[in-house]
Image (cartoon, rainbow, N blue to C red; front, top):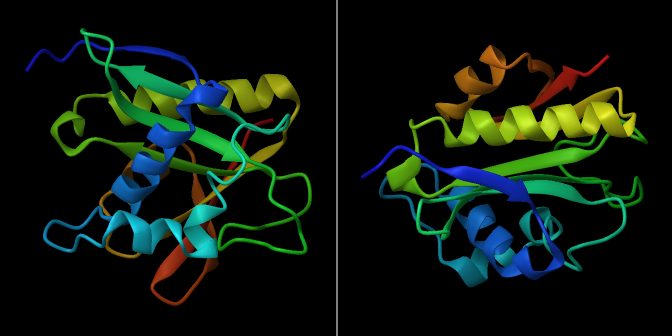
Length: 164
């Protein structure tokens, strides 16, 4: 498999692929796959793609050399009346990232995360938050990119990166 890929801004037409990436993010543990419909029907996960793309939504999609999507990172401003696990305050977008398993550990997630955090900073956001399950190898990756645990939870942690 070639380790080359490109990225582009996410578009409204990417909603279905972003849903696939929510499923990849949830099913990070080998052998622990939950079905797509079960994941996306829960508010905690479905809210990251329902009604995509709203004016405050932003994200990036990675493409393999043939132009097929292989990963995505995006953020949403979720209402404080319906906060997710990563809610840390009004005005802090909550992000999610997913990469197809065969493309993990090839720099795809890091490239997407760097692009997304740069975009959030350029847009004027001071922080970006995410939620990660304890034991998920991605937590080490997030720490290496400047995220820190701000709210320990039951089996999961909220991490925040200061952008300015």
